[in-house]
Length: 202
Image (cartoon, rainbow, N blue to C red; front, side, top):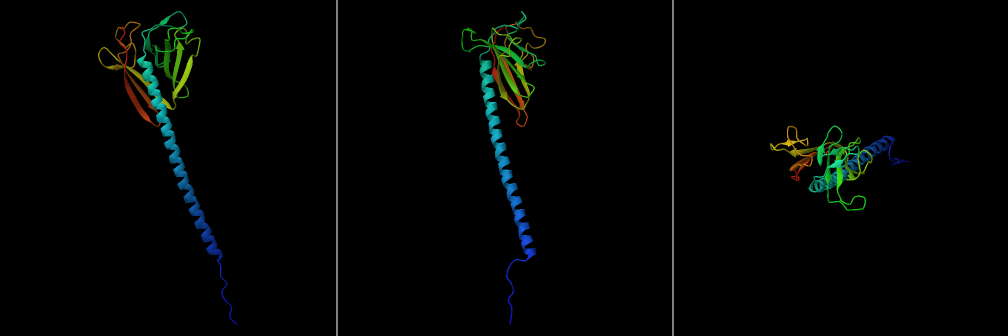
């Protein structure tokens, strides 16, 4: 009487199959994870680019509305219509074109650009009747992960200086730059710059 072989998987075959299944699962997970990471980077890149374009629009509008208006600093002294101080802030100037309301009937505001402690490009503004020493004004965050922002100004000698008024040049307290070059350096996006026409006011 003959006996047939019992069909089925041996223990070794089962172990090999499970090992192959585990390897395929790991490879599949890595592929899906790579796609998700790529999609997230792409989404974040588009969001950063949108923020950058919005920042350029706001900066451009501010420069377009420069005004040769002096500003009282809250201690009885007057600030120039446009000035820079990279040790304390970036740039500060008077901007017109705002809404004319009871608290600020001229529509002129004082605008300051700087990088805050969180490495964000920050736009801060006050009504012309307010003071930066007494109020935080209105704060708008334009960009994250900003390494540097630089405002450069066309001098009478036709080169660009980060200082206004430029060193070794005589300007009135109401003078405004004729051309302004703004450069923003962003971590992950690199350096980008724009050139804006200023307002010639002496």
